[in-house]
Amino acid sequence: MSMIRSPELAPQGQKKIAWAARHMPVLSSLAEKYASRRPFAGLKMALCIHLEAKTAYLARVFQRCGAQVAVTGSNPLSTQDDVAAALAREGIAVFGWRGATEEEYADHIRRTIDTGPNLVIDDGGDLITMLHRERPDLLPQVRGGAEETTTGLTRLRALAEAGELAFPVIAVNDALCKYLFDNRYGTGQSAWDGIMRTTNLLVAGKTVVVAGFGWCGRGVAMRARGLGAQVIVTEVDPVRALEAAVEGYRVMPMLEAAPLGDIFITATGCREVIGAAALARLKDGAILANAGHFDVEIDKAALNRLARLAGSPRPNIEEYRFPDGRRVYLLAQGRLVNLAAGDGHPAEIMDLSFALQFLAMDYLRRSEGLPRAMLPLPAELDREVARLKLAAMGITIDSLTESQRAYLGLQ
Image (tube, rainbow, N blue to C red; front, top):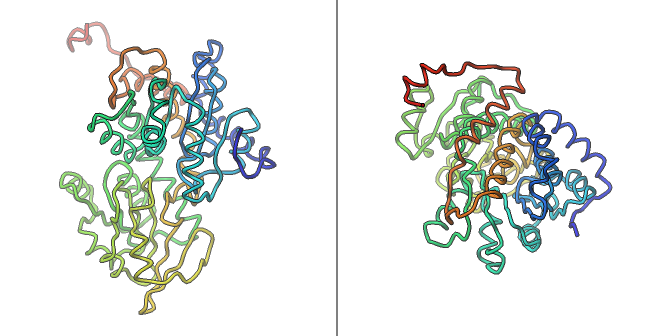
């Protein structure tokens, strides 16, 4: 049933998944707690998510808890073929391979939808959007879904506002234990991991331009400064721009930053953030990377109009040469640099996010009468994940006394 490229790589993928699992104690504790009950027995799950070791462990946990699981990648360059092979060998339906064309990518999502899911997890909104557009006949059997990216939430909220969302969707990305850690610390570390392993260049002393000062941009800027870079932030939101300024970053429009930057990283969720006018002003040797979900933040069409592709000096680097001789380097085809050119977020960070996803699915499974809307993750589930993570780290905290609870009006 699976559609994968390299089944012989399964042993290598199984080792990767085992390594990730050893560093995901919260998800492991939930697996231990729920597995004997098999709460997802009789339910079909569809996951459209970056198909690598940590997400594979999440799929494995759902399977262990009784679900029939189908998985596809949420980005053509983030799927790891050895991990896909490992999951397929374990009886999980896998549709995807690294380097899929746009047509193949869409077909993989389509085949995942064809399994007839009752619960869905999305990363970017592609699966839920296609499910609504192409398979409305399957919508009545879907109990709910979850979305874990800023980009995906934007797309699905538009669907909800148009009155077209057919089932409840938990906005996992808005949970505290998601964006405070995954978006900030996960993106901050993994984006730089992808950039540094791809370029093998020094960051210290360079000027880094971070486009967007949301939680992902905050993390990228923080890590850039920690690596010794001079950091410029570009923003369209005045409050975020002000926050970046009082954090000590230089803040300016992209057109002003364009000739100054050595490394550019986009993290906005919007399109053409580095557009034709900015591309035309880049200095010789500028490096372009994207940490947003889709490959639209750097205007690749404009780059191909303004410069010619002159080869690939290293894997995952494309060199563009302008008529005046300037060279610009695009990393990972403008796709998510942390996954297309790296291994994504650290396992300990994804432990939090995937524990939230697990609890969101369990909440949808046992809830009746939820509105067809974008819904917040219940706060008690957020706190449960935080408590489990603290326990795994060997950290204890205070609790309120009865008099303190009375003083705060909590009784």
